[in-house]
Image 1 (cartoon, rainbow, N blue to C red):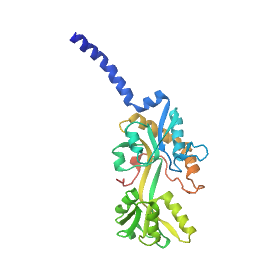
Image 2 (tube, rainbow, N blue to C red; image 1 turned 90 degrees about the horizontal axis):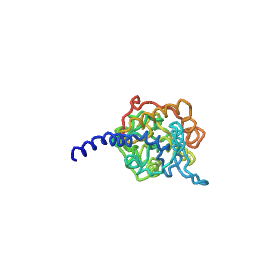
Image 3 (cartoon, helix red, strand yellow; image 1 turned 120 degrees about the horizontal axis):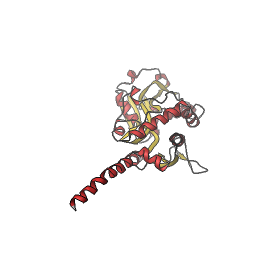
Image 4 (cartoon, rainbow, N blue to C red; image 1 turned 180 degrees about the vertical axis):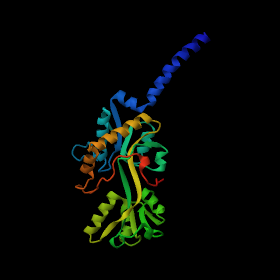
Length: 279
């Protein structure tokens, strides 16, 4: 009986292994269910937030999820999440992919895998217009403000400047207005809005010509899923070549929107970018 039982177990083991292998391949799972579970922000406009009238999620990341699902030949299932929970929902397998303005950092790359970036965000330095033409070396050792615990703060240290941090963006911006700092570091979208806000109040601010840090933005996936990564990268390249990413960009954050952002970077391998990853 022992021999028969052992033989039966040995016969079953390849089947069990194949089953486990299938479950471990997220791309096969997505194709089998015919649905892409795409994680997006629950309420962070213009990336993903409820439409005031329909209450359906809309935004740049929502449209990117839809375009990706179409490229993969499956239906889309949006799964809203918070900024704090966006990495855990990936690592636990609750979502297949995450499109939530996700910047590449060392700590995130240790937990998840990133697609090729579809744009490169920049941490920018906002200063009084008289200092806008100064080189980055001018700000070494000087006081620059930012929101506490952000990549903006990290970029200040990389530049050899002194970080003055605050719990919110408005306070960090106010520090520049009150001359408590010679510059305020934030992302490009926020910088543009702050400069326009200051101009309306009679204060002339500007961005320096150099970025404080580069942050490649890509699609997040669970580690150990090479087939899914390959498919997502191929889909992004096809979306870029067709102009679909440009259309989505222009609709939500392009030059004719209040964000006035120009898309300068095409989809490219992360390895081809020359940048210093933030922690």
